[in-house]
Length: 372
Image 1 (cartoon, rainbow, N blue to C red):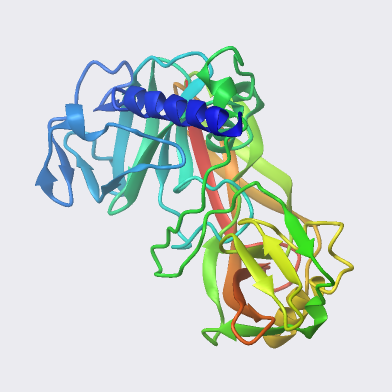
Image 2 (cartoon, rainbow, N blue to C red):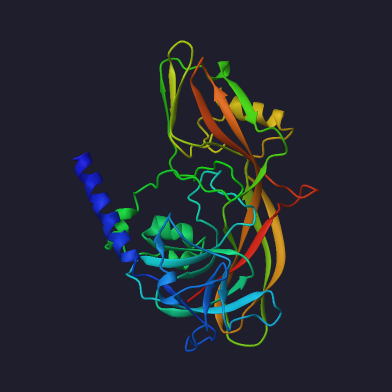
């Protein structure tokens, strides 16, 4: 029966992939979506806008490097003020437009990471605003089901209410496979929500050694984008968000890929991608937890366990829109190799929240997410 169920899921995903091909955005220069952009470019090359903004099914994403939108140039010269005409979607589905993470890398922490910071999310037909800075990379994804759409709606509870009678219900239990994405060139596997450890025999993790590499201060990686100011409507005039919200950050020690480590006496530890030794209460007192402590010592850092820090800001909102504000914390990460025998090794990501100099805040990016 398991192989039959697996086949059903593959068929459902194939059907979803086919449906995704028809999903797209169309860019306009006015809030009623009646005046199309005069031209659309990618890296300076003129493209057919009606076909170029086709979306891909989450966790995959269509990518658009250095896009240009003729006639939509912002008055301050910082980019483009674009209004997107979104297409209708099935019940329980949604569309998201994302902007590449400023950190340059993502997928090192154990969560279902979108391809960039979500700047627009739609669960139906509409005309939705977004500001596109010059020279950025945009990504577009389509989702169905509470799991994937929950990741793309980044904490807005209004999008979590899905009709489980649709294909989305079939996809809720589907766990995406690991993927590698990193503009900075680091091998960063996407954080699956899977948490699983399996031991065979008397596996003694304290006999293993940890190696941090490459040496240096680590590389920046994006944490999870979280809501810090609730949705609000700006009908006209001047509107803004005043944010003062707690953001919880923790040290993360995650597996880069599904692997089995065997020690010198033949006992083994099987680890699925995305398992976080810090977050798992059952293993924080075990020998495996010592791996994270050893890495923290070698990187001159200390383990941070679920610390909540307050982030504050005042951010403007475009008139005639619905929107909310999110915050994406920055982490500093290192690649770690754990060796437990002559040949067997496991690859891991060790990440620490990038705290402010006084230790009372965390570095990161604010994003205004526009919705319909």
